[in-house]
Amino acid sequence: MFYAEKMSEALRFGDVLRGYFSTTPVIEEPALKEPIKRYNIDVDLPVFSVVMDPCCQIGHKTISLTPLIQIRPSFFGNPYLAEDLTRINRKMDPQQAVPPHAWAKMSSEEKRKRLEVGREYAFVSLFVYEKHGLLPEYTIHRKGKDIEINYYMINFRDTHKLCCDKIITPTEAPLESKVLELSLQTRSELREKVASYYASVPPEDKVLED
Image (cartoon, rainbow, N blue to C red; front, side, top):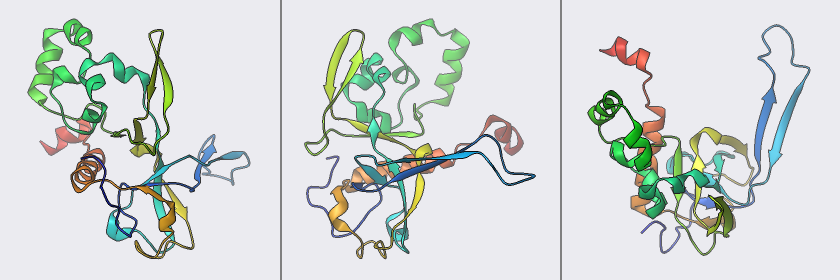
């Protein structure tokens, strides 16, 4: 089960919320020598946002959120993912992470490297939210076909901080803004993938660690 059958009376990690703004400062370069004279702040009100704070850290009039966004049409190019888009949330075999034709075109050396790594996340910064009646359908276009869908996803890279005077603790907060809550199992999957995202080690660091 992807979502909890009954929502708790508190804000929790992974909750789907409504009514919160998203902001992104945009600059040309860092302000190293003098104050920035040109900058933009993109402000958006996404239909839904997702809580990215650990449950016990929600409060103190701040919250970390990321917009709930539409999925990428390219996912449907991979039959393994098209069958169940939430498979993106879990580790998969190297052959499952790419379309069959892409795997067939890979060199033997590339296949060997991937097989040696074993099961991994194919899209480490993304987490797909299962379809639900409370999430509106939208249309994606794939190879001349229109597909109606209400799967959504989040991108950990889009996480931002928002201040809200009414978010005092997880329970003393605007609970009317809460739309959906993840099941215990799904929240655990999200926690594991977020941890893997931030624990990613670049190749140059792996060499030093070895």
